[in-house]
Length: 172
Image (cartoon, rainbow, N blue to C red; front, top):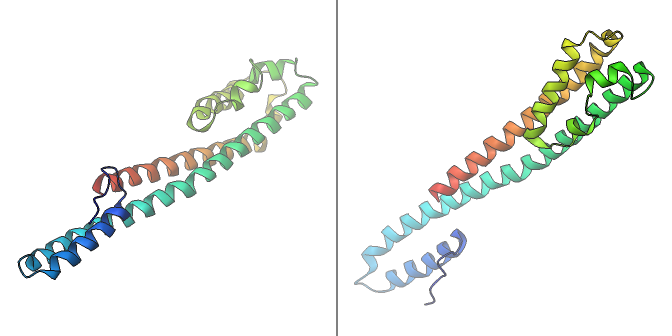
């Protein structure tokens, strides 16, 4: 009977255990050990299944985060375009007040790193006293806040799924 490598997967270890259980059951001297090996193998297999299920949840959550990040960027760029239109140009007082370093620093970060930049933009819009800002609050800002909430939810979903996967992997 071959031995598996030290870094072998759970699937390989379960298959190996099946061979060991069959071999133990074949001899009267070792037959009483087979049920213990079978129970342990069942626990390992269940833990492996739980880990695979948790890993699949992470795999499904990551694209949702990517899409939420994309929509956040699109919404911020659309908002910046609204500011430009309201201002008449990128060099106007509204645009400079809301995007002092341009749009790039707000959309360039990804995932959880984008939240502080978006929060700072929302705060600048809320605190601004530049003439013409009133039309950029309300529904236009609500769309940015909605996308920010979607991004934060996606980040939380990935983090929660990742923690569950690491916990399951730890048991395995």
